[in-house]
Image 1: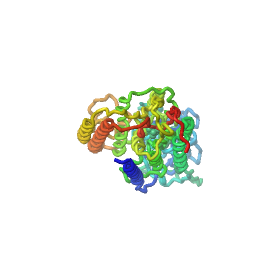
Image 2: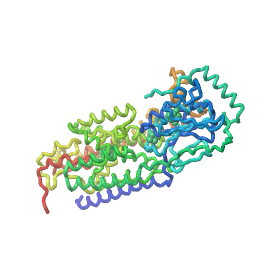
Image 3: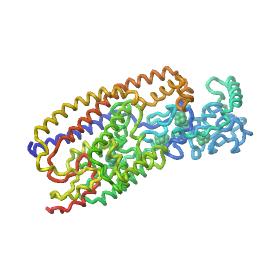
Image 4: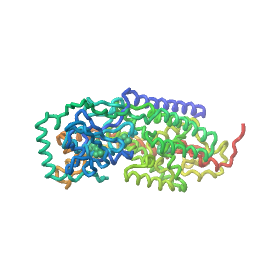
Length: 185
Length: 432
Ligand code: SF4
Ligand code: SF4
Ligand code: SF4
Ligand code: SF4
């Protein structure tokens, strides 16, 4: 083969490969599906505690969410108070949350509001367990997307024993338990 | 690895639990079916606070793609025109810092292969444009200028390049055999993605834990071992594992312009021969033919025939890999665990099976799901086997073909364009 001919053949193969790369990229991009992000399905989550420990971020991008519209505003909150609490006050020894991230405020007799301080919450799910077992299940874990770096493979998703993580469209990035929530973004 | 999970002990206390359950039951009867406690009607006009649901932070901003292309262009310029190892190395350091520590090493081009495969196999999988660019740009650059991406842009390559201070020579035969692993890894990644069993390249990325300064203990150990090995065996991940390197290798083989050792004509002084830690410098071919043409042709013919045979054999053998490979899928693992527990093979339950038993999915359904997945794996692992057969066959052919070379030149496929060899060449560039 003459060197010239060889060069032509190389050019041809090079062109073909370029087309192949472009083709693969375009095929992959063909679906105009929205960008996907990770989120926890609260119905599947079993509050195993791995959300607090397995996220690549420390503290975890998973935080406790509180759907007020389904909360009972109980005085004896299963998510707030330890089951053996001596009194229903805000003393640390009475609180379930290891970081005291839940703020209890009196609304009117006999109702109390419980608000999660997201800066303190580590996503351990202890309150979620309490609220689910003894309350309305208005507390649950969600990936907070201002924190989450949206790993290509979510480290918690891989460790989650309940298969609770899935990819959902970024435009609707939360799986809230109640659609009556007021939301701010 | 199981982490100790903090749970209040009190909840485990059976008496307390029981009494509280009764309490709940009592309350539940008094409220309506769905919730234990009714939602109160507030007389004070209280309005509940809003839930903070921020939009996803767009961490993969288009900015990253721009930086990627600019660094690729700069790397090409340094490798092909400036030809100074020191300058290339500084760009490498920049990449570790920016793509690694600042951008947390995610998404990287190596991992983007999986997004592309997911996008091809699953039409509902959306890929951001940045990820597409991360996949395609380094390949296009490889097609033009060789593996400039590996030389100074890839954060995984860069961190290994930075620790490779005392590289020893790996015997070329060992090198050749080990170079099959990236293909196996690529095949496994493709299988895992198409079977929806997760992105294994991300799961077993040895360095992302360092970039994020946090990972599971075993992954940090793996990363540390890689780096320590990397002090002596330069770029162990790149050479013997990186699946994206397979694609770069192919593209680079056909590169339009590629890094050269000598700026003009090789005088065969042999000075550069030992300078490459990657065995990527090919020696000039000997003057006399090492064997008669007919023998060479006959062997090549034999290997050409062997290629389809190996592929078919791989296809057959792949079927036997169904069981082990299907365990990549979490559902299969769970089903096997649950089945084992049912048969009394384990003394205790594990966290996954506990979670499953807590759900209301019947065991039969889980088994059926697992069987279906295994059937898919039957097909998948056959194709995987065929692919590996094809790779081994092609490797045999490629080592048996002797090319004529007039001087020392880098192997276009495996050269990372790191620039170590440049300074060894005594020939000066001819001005023209
Ligand atoms: S890892 Fe899964 S089960 Fe455990 S707390 Fe997180 S979402 Fe829930
Ligand atoms: S108990 Fe855990 S999940 Fe609940 S608010 Fe406290 S830190 Fe967050
Ligand atoms: S995607 Fe990454 S950052 Fe987000 S929750 Fe999962 S591990 Fe944490
Ligand atoms: S071989 Fe792979 S890991 Fe190494 S520099 Fe190239 S793309 Fe990065």
